[in-house]
Length: 256
Length: 252
Image (tube, rainbow over all chains, first blue to last red; front, side, top):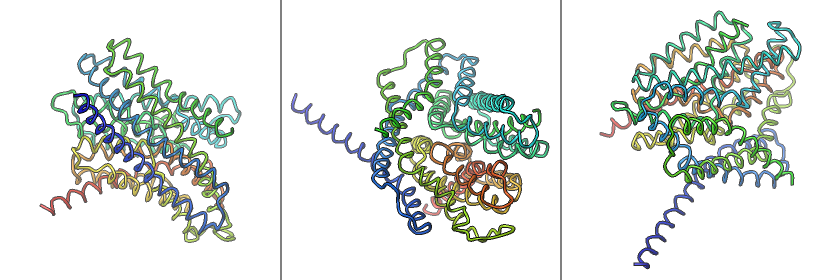
């Protein structure tokens, strides 16, 4: 008995090692294009040597190991947690709590997002030089903070709307296309300096940590509600989170 | 030593990113759901993996690729490569810039962790009819075309809204014609692509271009590349689904 158990264990371990190797190989493969592009442009186009090759190689090992750990962490941590929370909310049947959770998740993960902080500081600078606001550091700071809060509100609102859509089973394209139409109309009325920032703000809000969690939440909800398909209804939360910031920032530019 | 310090800093930064998420998850778990999730220890282990993994990933990128990538974006846009041109910029002089934009857009997207996450989930849910790798390549092609077109826009100085509005119209047409089940995923892929790896390099490219081309202001023309990078994958993913569908029905 003990021996058979040992053999099975050994087999299990072997399968584990094989899947681990597969993950590491995948991470390595994902990195090949970046290395190839940078090497080609550095050597062939710019005709310059690589500074500090040793440091680059060490960095690459870090990237491969890091990416592999991240992928494993997704499967054992973020995905199961997002899905189990979605199921728990569905079982509880408390709509207000679920929508409150969606809002907090969107707002909380966005407001401190480094990419957003950088973009809103830049935006304040632009508004200052364009004469939309007073050109001093204090006004810039307030403007940047207001912009950040606007985007965070937009993402919170997006997740509330997106979760509500999953519950109701509305088809996503009417909402998204409606949003596009709104963006186009607002573009005509918003000040020209804000348009570029507004369009970009949709892309910068969804960070690497938020995306897997929000995706798992949507898919978990769609799976827990009878009559919803995970593929048709589960995806789409990120889409709302990248659309509403554009609308909110355009409006922000018109109001401030 | 310097490497260790960088590691510590990056770990702190990732912790700070995770902190609000952890507070919200814990808060709702304890106050609202009031139920311990199954296999709590394993979940915590997963979080630790993500934390350590992202930290190593970011430090590695900072060490190895970002410095070169960013200098490269600036160098390629400077007059060294383009040649001493005076007066109005001619868009034909910037061939290497478009090539670099397309190549780096593709390459950074393939390595984007958030996209890996979504495509893994999509493959699992579709029961394998959508391949994770195929989806990622489709998204990367979209970003590649988008960023290249975005640099062309900065060089020519044409208004950003024209491009974006035209893109929306194409998306609306494709939505009407493509396989229904791909639509939500395609819309998602726009937001997913622009994260940790793509944003810094693409931003450097936009700022570099806008500050070296005569008549462009980095503050105003430097923006907009991310918008291109999030719009075009929507089209390429829907296109990929249509192609996939046609190939499958052809085989039967």
